[in-house]
Image (tube, rainbow, N blue to C red; front, side, top):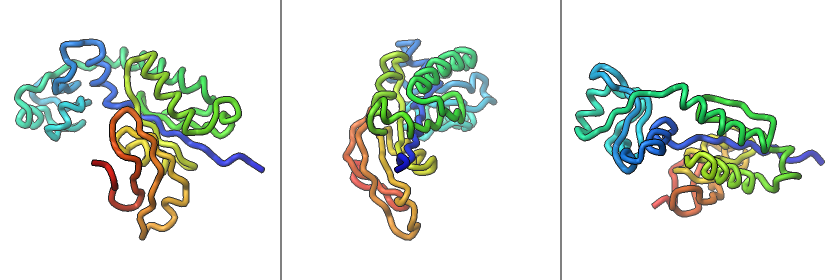
Length: 201
């Protein structure tokens, strides 16, 4: 019997901004954006502290400063982000050769054939998160599913590891509950696909 397909979607948390906060302790816990160093620029990335003010990527820096006058702006270091990204992708390839990079900080991993070596997909997801944290001091969000779409939805569930079967999206008129395993942030253990999120307080 063929193995059930297992897809991981890994998304680094606020990647550019998190790298800057990691490298510069004085930025930790403060609202930080990467980019927008001129008043006519735009935000390339925002830390979670900045996001609490509604600041998002591609927002004009003038609007970001209006929302948060104490906002700290950092010049992008793309070559450095690429170097950190290579380190992260090297970790991915230790678990599977089937890695589809979507950007410097996001990828799909097909771990179907990896389960005999590394255990169940949820364990692989947890191990990858921990390896990234141990080796780069950066956090990530991972979704686990039988297809890319649902894995990506899982990774967006506030930094949780979600295992959502493909049937979860089969009936678009009905919410489908997914079993979730807490990742790097606190929360409860259920979410829905195709409807409102639940038990996320």
